[in-house]
Length: 130
Ligand SMILES: [Zn+2]
Image (cartoon, rainbow, N blue to C red; front, side):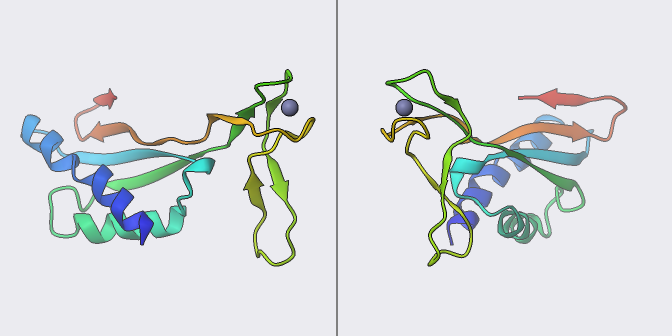
């Protein structure tokens, strides 16, 4: 399961923050997950919960912020939402990395994020943005 690997990569860093700030408790962790990162938020959330169970981070709330994809065409001026295929064999629309205007392969401009966006501690207004 791909999400488990992502979750461990993200959540593994949290005990380190705890150690650096022993007097403070992590109360909220905000993750940024891009639409192009092929990550299911529900699965990721479940994996994060499993990994942090029994650690100091277990009672913090996890907020997963999904960043919509933006693509850029190298040949035309197109920059915007990606093309979605309406393949009847696929349950959900699949992003094709094809330009909506010329059909060439586009580059991802936004939507590949898979990071910890911010961590909030129990101290008033103590937000640490990474
Ligand atoms: Zn194009």
